[in-house]
Image 1 (spheres, chains in turn brown, cyan):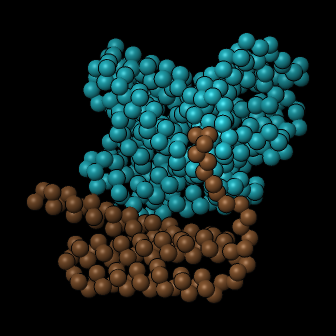
Image 2 (tube, helix red, strand yellow):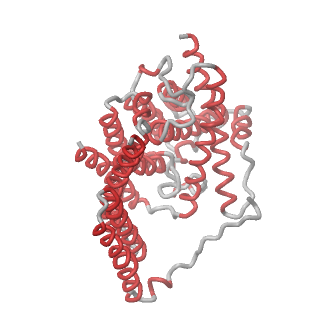
Length: 107
Length: 316
């Protein structure tokens, strides 16, 4: 019982954390200037939303909330970003000239 | 009682001894990530040693402020070290002399004197860098305040030794939204306060682009060594506040025996090293911001800290 309570309270805190980060990512989407970065934050935000729904579904043992989480994952993190990525022009991708390489010889 | 005084002094000695090492490791790792070999991790020690043996040149036009500043910059992180948990998880002799706001003000005093000294000599680059540092400083100040207020509000105290226990008792507290958001805000604050890359480039040699570095341009010899050492200690102290007070008290000594306190030294250094890895990744993957976009960066930090406070208030 003790263990169950501890897990329950951790899950509650993580759920609240998802809420807090959701708020933060909302500010982030407004503040971002790059289209792709904005889109990535949107995906992250949707994952947070799905996590929240999933945790609530587990805590209340409700199948409906799992379905909600599934729908969020499919639509908000896969379908909408995919469509948006298709729509935005090639120009957005073309401008990046420097890519990151980590050299392992010197390390 | 005698033990607690000795431990307090050990803390100060640890900060003085290992601050340049942390700086050296950070520089080395940054160069490694850029596919270069980089200087030895003991280079800051050698620099300080070299500077202590060099002659000092002081301009005739400068006032006493210029001469006093290196000592102020050197001594302020030492004072703050007396107040914060570096090695032990329980309050030491000087712990109740001042709270976190007091520590923040002592650190700010060092920055204030460094700014005055930069203006004092009349070197054109000094005042420019000083005014920019003040700009970053006054934008960072509200974030500092809000973070400290949130922390003290959550824990019901502003003494760092009492605050840091709150986050892991019980462990669920670690995942509190206000805690995580506050960590994010303070991370952005550390980046701004210590002149790291999205705000300032610490390894830049171009005077017109300098923010933090240009304050020390006029110093030579012993004063330059003290300024360098003081800067490294300020960095280390900020990391200790971040890691030991705001993030976790893990790795700190809980018992009052000597070997436990000594064992805490490698553990704390390990923690700092882990954090430095994260910092290096941040620094290497971002570009330096233009001067007038620093306001946006620190605005984001402020919004994060406000969000931390609001989520805390809504939870009540």
